[in-house]
Image 1 (spheres, rainbow over the protein chains, first blue to last red):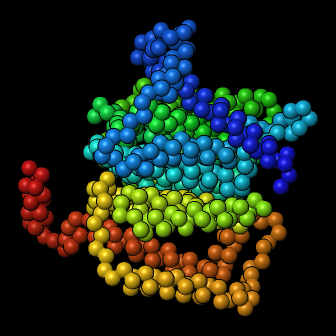
Image 2: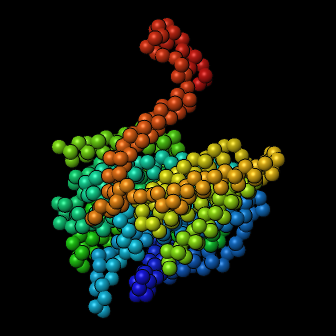
Image 3: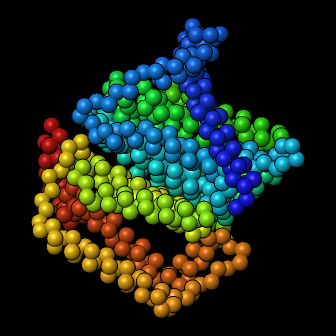
Length: 329
Length: 190
């Protein structure tokens, strides 16, 4: 293993970490502004022009707040839970190609940390492990509402992992590879080659499951807002609570990259326009997360389970069977 | 060199995690250590170049241990220590060490005598996902199907165990009995 490769990988890791930690902060600003405009409010306005420095103010608050460990919790698990959420979110990013390869000072850069040939499986697996954060945080807290939130987290994880896996199985059968780069190459022929035209059902299923994987409204019942607490995060304060937040927002950004890469052509033929196109699609899916939060109420846990096991999973299985039959004959 | 470092690091971490899982009296510590150990094992698959198996290890075992957490939540107050009923410690330790040594000997004996030959050599140009599929659907087709049938049986029995009034059959009951059963149901709701 040569030194240049090692240095390149380390630089890529640092760049991805820095950009997406910053984006997670700015994402909260976007969320508050978008929600505010949809509800005919102004949102943050006082700190800086249009409230732009609100992110910095929040950051200062999170970093300087006292780190409280309540007395009845399981200390080790309580401390490690937020780290799991944030760390696994960024680990998942290792297999996502953020941009097409480009040449910088006559050196070809591949904007993907590790081009493993099972990319999509690894990304989804890592995002699944990320739900251990809420689960452990809730179970380690000596608080019944946190425990309730952890139980819901486990239920959502176990059910929707099935839908995610089954929904991408049909596209994988068509492309014949698990690598996100191969998915992109398969669809690089332009808008008519996009997988969303041949797999519309899988696209919608995966999109719905993405809301459950990231724990966003309408599946936000992991952090039960309607009990006027923050679910698993109730007993957390300061930066530990902030890590949960960074993990959630980073996950939203990464899944917003994965959906276009899987179904909507990704960065296309790798030109400048294609790269901008991927960023645009990513921005749309991120905006859609915020839009849904403004427009939809949360579903009840039993409705969530009903939707998963009685609607989405049968549809996903039928989709796979039909895809298999079409490919066979 | 990197492979050796990674192997020893993850070997150490996995052993430590499973040791914690066995020895601790805290249910949450045990479950978390178990989950971490399962995920660290996937590193060995990645080191060996079996990316697909590594990712599957993460996906399957993180879900499986999650189900264990759900049971832990139902049976224990996970923030308190569990009082364990330990029998004779020497017998337990002796038997477990003996079992461990036996397992190692069983797996190591063919290697020592160099009897292990790769029955399915790598096919040029196929990724390890395809390789796995080929072996699974040719040589190991029967075990694979048997496993599928076993899982189906487990699923059906799970539904029967968890379902209510599975011993009643609407087709065998008369209309009057069905109406009675419905009334009974309504009574319970009220």
